[in-house]
Picture 1 (cartoon, helix red, strand yellow):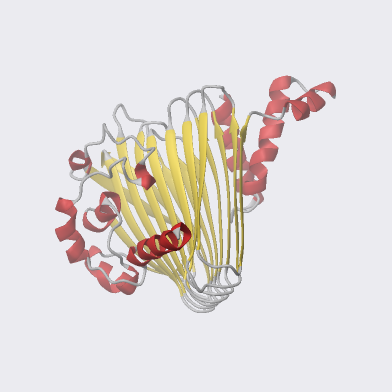
Picture 2: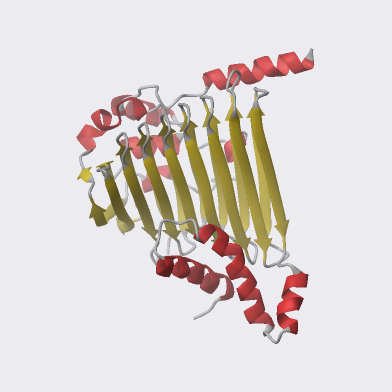
Length: 388
């Protein structure tokens, strides 16, 4: 009896969740924004995020955004806030919270990217005069095309906190391939909120990767809507935090069609009193069959005062699926450290070598050159071990 009731409740909750295909206009968002408060910690998604010192009004009225197109090979790119509704069409959905609403109503830059047959686009986001950056990027990969989209976020030295709020929406048409990478190099004083939404059609393939270093308090959402048969989603990431920095990453793979697959693999390294949270969410509604999904979260703590939390949430309402999840939290393997030191490697070098191996597994998947992959690992090591 309890099992049947639980299924009914879960089905009702799932039915109420906004789908990416539900239209919602910018005008509606502007009317909605004044009615929205900061998310409550009663909300499961925001339970671990402390927003008590955040003054939204200050940041939505004081900022100049800088967005540079540093590479464009084969894509059509337009910019105009007035065209937002016509660009996104059915992809524009009712905002989940005040931060997504800000992306529609207060964005400093709107960018639309339409992939050619095989396109590479690289963007760099910077916070100009003022204290906030609010950007909205919409990308479409037409049927049978390939798009590599890389976004870089560059923090800046500041005596006060800055506010970063970005929304990226990717529409993957049948048979398209998208490789997405977000690189965030923050300096520790940033309130940072990011949302990536992908929607996938038949036989499409999305690889979404995140590299996140630093930041004061942050929340990242990755919402993958797998809408049609044959679609595949892969989400990976690396986070390094120090001091009292905090980041909550929430990844959702929602399977709405048969014969689909998803996988998540996220790695975090923390030092000092840094705190990370990883939420891996899998949603498989009733009647969806032959779904394969797995998720892994690995965390290394360089100090006993650091804290990593892993929270898998699996809503599986179908029997014909294969789903796995796993998580690890611990220090550097003492046996591996001893082995390297016994072969003459000094302890600091041995620790850095083991950390390089830990990060390389994810770095190898990034849509970058070998030199840039090594730079990603080097940046992380310098931050963790205060190297020159």
